[in-house]
Length: 468
Image 1: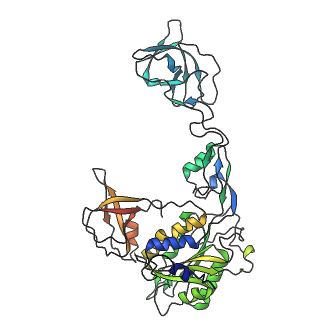
Image 2: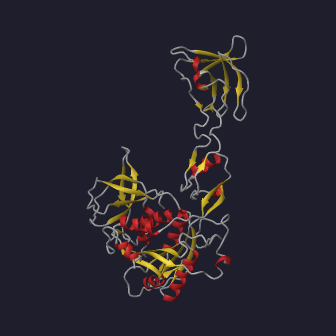
Image 3: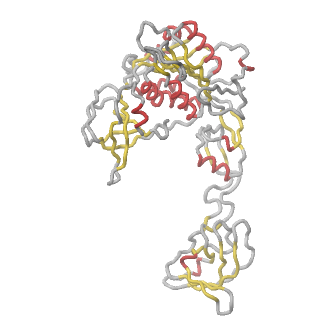
C-alpha cells in the first residue's frame, strides 16, 4: 500500500532534510499541499479591493468610447500643418466635455475644445492654448496663430479604444484587485464583480506563559504580541480571521481549539509549542488530530515550524453561530473579533484544514509568515503567484552570515544622493526583539549559500510594502 503521509511525501523531495530544510524546498512543499478555493460570490465594486477575481473580465465597451481631446486647446486638421510654416485658423465654435459638437469645420477653421471633449468630425489634432497666439479675426470673431513646430499632426488626441477595445480582455482571473483594477472596472461601467470567497483562517497562541493585553502582569509571563501581529497580517491580506485567543498548554483545551478551528476555517495558524520542550503538549495534540510534519528550517529567524492537515469534524450548530456573517457584510477580519461567511461548506479541502505551526518568538513568527505562510495563503485564496521583488542595496556595514541557511535581517533602506539604495541594520537582530521590526522598512535577505558581507557590498532587500 502506498504511503501517502505528508512525512513520506516530504521525504521524497530532492535534498529534503527535516532538520535543516531549505526555505525554497519548504515553500515548494507548501504549494503542493494546498488547493485554491473555488466558490465565487458577487460583491459591489466598492467592496472589491484586495479580493481575487474569479473569472476573466472582457471589456463590454471601448475606452475611451470616442476620439477625444487630451487637453484644453484648439482642434483642427493636422494635414493643414506645413513644415516650417506658421498656420492661422479661424475659431468657429466650442466643443465641451460631455456634449459632442455637431457643426461643420472647413479648411482654415478650428474649434476651441476642452479636455475629454469628443473630437469634431474630420479633426485629428489639438494645439494647447499656451502654444497659440489669439487675436481678433479680420472679419470679426477669433483667430489663432500656430508657430512652426508647435505641434505635429495627431498630437494631443486620445483615440477611441486607446485604453481598451470592446471585446478585449480587461482583467484576468486570479488577479488580486488593486486600486487601479477597481478603477478600470468602474471605467467599463461595472457596479459589481465576481470574486472568490474570502479565505478563512483561524489563529490562536499557545502557552501557559502568555498573557492577553489587559491581564495583570505576573512573574515569568509575557504579553501576547503574536496574536495581534498575525491577525493584522491576515487582515491586511484580505482573509476572514477567526481569532481564538490564547490556549493554555493543556491537551484537552488544545484539542478543543484545533477541532473548533478546523471546523470553521480553511487554514489554522498557531504560534508557540512547535520547538523541542518537555512541557509543550501542542506537538502531540497536532499529531493526534491530523497528519503533521515538524521542520527545522534552514532559516534565521524562524527555525521550528509545523505544517500539515488537521482532520475536520462538523462543529455542532456552527451554521447558526453568531461568529458567522453574510459575505456582503463580512469585513476583512479584525483583530479580536471573528468574521465568517455562511458558505461554510465550501472549503479548499472538505476533510481537512491546513495547519501552520509557527515559532513563538515574535520576529520569528512574523518572518516565517512573510516568507512561507503568506505565499501559501495567496495560493489558497486563488491569487496568481507573484514572488516578492528583491531590490539591491549597498550594505552600510559588515554583516556576519553562516553559509547553509537563509537569513532575514531587519534593515532600513534609504536612497543616497547618487540615487543608489543603501541599507543599514535596524537595531538588535534577536528573534524576540519586535522593536527592530518597527524601526525597519524591509528585510535584508542573505541567501542560503552566502557568507559574510563586507561594508559596501550589494545585498538583496525585501521591502515591507507589499508583503506586510
